[in-house]
Image (cartoon, rainbow, N blue to C red; front, side):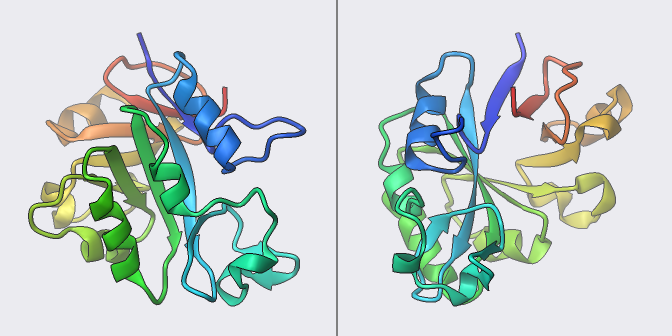
Length: 193
C-alpha cells in the first residue's frame, strides 16, 4: 500500500487549496496518511497557509492578515484540528518571526508534524535540541551536503527517485513530490490525486 499525503488539502471549485476546510477534509479522508500545506508570514507576523508569494499584486510579507481572503487560515487553526495523521508543513517564507513559529509548534507537541523547506537555512533554524517534530530538505538531490545526517526525511522530485537513491539514503525517509507516478512502497508520496 502506498503512503499518500494530500498536497495542499482537498480542493475543488468551491474549496480553496491550503484552506481550513480543504486541510480538514484531507485529514478525514482514509486514502491519505497526512496532508501537506505551505506557510508564509504576513506583515503583521501572522503565520498563515498560502502557497503563492503574492496576493492581489502584493507580496504576502507586505500584506496584513486582515487584507487576505477569509478562507486563509492561520497555522495555529490548522494544528488545532484533531488528527494523528501527518501535518507536513512546507516553509515558504518566514522572514522576521521564526520564534513565533517555533512557539506555535511547541504548543502542539502531541501532533505528528513534519517540517520541510527548499532552503537549508530554514531547516537549520528549526533544528533545535529536544524537538518532537521531523525535519526535511526539499530538492535533496540538488542540495546534497553533509547536513543529511541531521535530517529525518528528504523531498525528491518524483522522476529522480530510484532504488539506488533510496538505498543511499539508508534510514532517512524519502518524500516524493512533483508527480503522481507511484513506484516504491517505502516512499511517502505528496500527491494531487
